[in-house]
Image 1: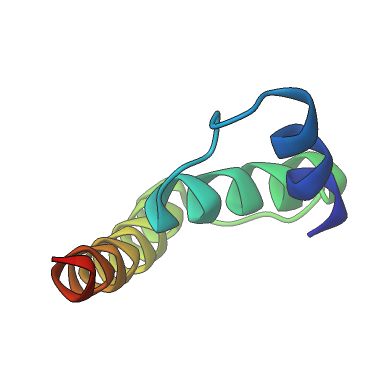
Image 2 (image 1 turned 180 degrees about the horizontal axis):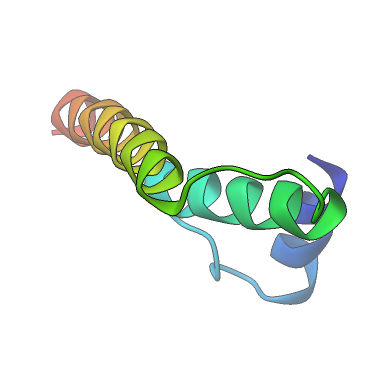
Length: 66
């Protein structure tokens, strides 16, 4: 989480949505632990589930704002 916070400090508004946070966290995990062997289709499926959930959270957040 510190890496994403630092990115936001350096690039104001670079990360704005929940799905962008999810993507960055998945990317950082992959970079930190490159030896994790997972089938790419399984990884894609996991990512899609997480991204879908993040999009739902973001949509609810936007609805609450208006």
